[in-house]
Image (cartoon, rainbow, N blue to C red):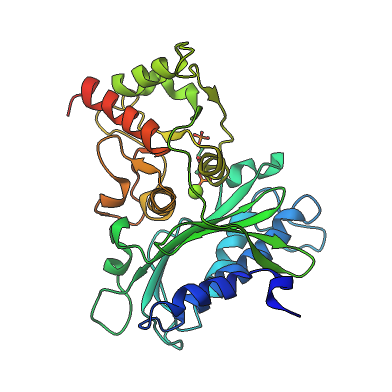
Length: 342
Ligand code: AHM
Ligand code: MG
């Protein structure tokens, strides 16, 4: 069968991208194949979630008398099992695990680290809302034989690749290796991710804002004034903007990438003034999404600067996140600069 008939598979796409880089070892192709494999397993599990005994809480028993595992815990195990033994990674971090996850001694250590959120938005799953997996890959920078925390605690500017898989009405993998953003849709008949959205570019400005607006009273003056501004009617600039909020970061970012606009998760500054408490995690939520948004021509900010430039101090560190179309994010930053104390 001619490859044009088959379409461009994820493997072929990454392989062809790497051809232009003589120093490429093919390791990244291997890594992405493993991510694709684990995603296919999770896609099937998520699709069958209503049928199988994987919903609900840990500790329950299913009809076979086995302990029921929550889907997010299952996803964690599936991704670790896909990553730990092939010799690509030196250390891993997962939203589900407090400490860095070492590569077992019996397996070879590789040249990359990976941070991932195995099943983001999983609190929505009982309502059949889209959930997803997010991943961020860095080069190993430590000099010892095995991986260390410093291999994970790197700025987003140093990312080698990042992406997400959204388990929605279809399963899509959206990926950047630093040269644009491409989307692949899983063809369930042949079990392959096929290039369906090459070269995704986010509109320079969008007219959708996306946030949990119930938290408005807790946000800073600058953020609240920005929200008031985008809701103030102005025919010429298309305001008020529409609001769309799924409450599942992968799905909200996916829509934002395709349609433009701004997705926000600000710090609840006024709720807890001593300790501004944003929700989303830097290493495996904000940083990879920022990498994708920037590579698609958009922006991602903490309100005061690029998310990609935040120096990570902890594996589960949280940061405020404002990501989307370039002009919308710049406007938000202007409000923060004007109204919020430094
Ligand atoms: P999770 O990783 O525990 O699923 O939490 C992260 C999720 C994001 O997907 C989403 O953007 C956010 O939490 C929604 O939070 P809220 O329910 O406060 O709006
Ligand atoms: Mg998450």
